[in-house]
Length: 410
Image (cartoon, rainbow, N blue to C red; front, side):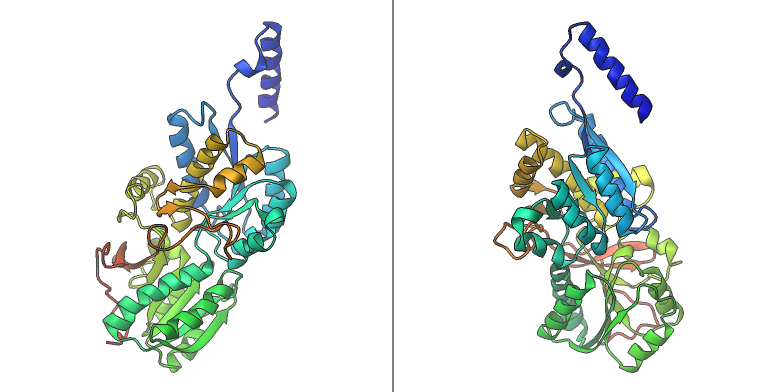
C-alpha cells in the first residue's frame, strides 16, 4: 500500500514536470468495500461474487473508463470488527459504497456509521425488518442504508406461499412446530410465521427459539417429536449444519421445511455428509433455474471460478456491484448524496429478479421490492447431492421426495 502511494506521488510529479494535467492521467478507480464473514458458507459468497462482477465490468471498460476496485474485509462474524472495517473503508480506503454482511446484527451495528460517515451501504443478505424500518423512521439520517435482500417478513410470506401449495394442498399438512435460532432476523420472521401459517391452514403447536450456541439438538428434537406435528418449519442460518446432521442421524420423522441459509450453497451437502437429503428450503435464486436471463450465466461463471455454487447472498452481491456501478454512472459522481439519489431510482434486471427499492413512504424504505414482477421466492430441496426446485410449479424441475425415516402427512 505504501509503495503504491509512493509510485502514485512520483508519477504525479513526473506528469506535472512534463506539463501534463493531473486529470489527463488514468482515472482513479471506484472503490467498493465488501465486509463479510469469510469463514462461513454464506459469507464467503459475498466477496467472491463481488469480485466476479467487478472483473466483468472492468473487462467491459469500467464506468466511463474508471475501473471498479473491490476492497475486502473479513469481519470474523464480529460486529465490532465490522465497524472497524467500515471506518477504515471510509477514512483510509475512500470507498464510494459498502456491501456489508449477511448477519443482521452486523448490519444493524453498521447502520449508524453509514449515517455518521455518509457512506452508502447495501446488505446482500441480512433480513431483519429493522434495517429498512430505521430508514423509514429517520430518513434524513439513515438514507445511506439500503436493504438489498428480502426482509424477514417477506421471507416468511414466501415460505408460507410455498407451504400452502406443497404442504397443505399437496400433502394435507395440518400442524407444525416453528423452530428458529435466536437472532435479530428471526424475530420478525417468527412473528410472520405465527400469523401466516394459520392463515393457510397449518396450526402451530409450538414455537421454539434456540440459542445459536446450541450443539446438542437431541432434547429439542425429542420435545418437538413428542408434540406430533406434521412438519418442522425452520428459521436457521448460523446453526444450519448441526441441527441438519442430528435430524438425519437421529431419524427425526418430520419434514424440515423453511429457511436454512447455509443449505443454499452446494458445499452444504459435503458439510453435512449428505444429511441434508430431503431438506426443503427457501431461496431467491438457484443455479439451474432461469429466474431471470442472468441467473444461470452468473451461476455458471461462479462455479467455473470457485468450484462451488454460490450461496444466496452471492447472487445479491453480484447484482449490487452492477447497480452501484450503474448508480455512479447515472449520478455522474461518487458524491454520497448523489449516489443515494441514483440508487433510489434503481431499475436493474438482476439475477434474482427486477431490482427496485421501496420509497421513503413505505414501511420498508430502501428494501428491495418483492412480489410478481420484482423479486419472489423459490422452495428448493436437496436430492442426492443436488439442489432441486420444487416450487413454484412453473419453474419446478422436481417433486418433493423425503428420506424413508420422514413421516409424510398425506
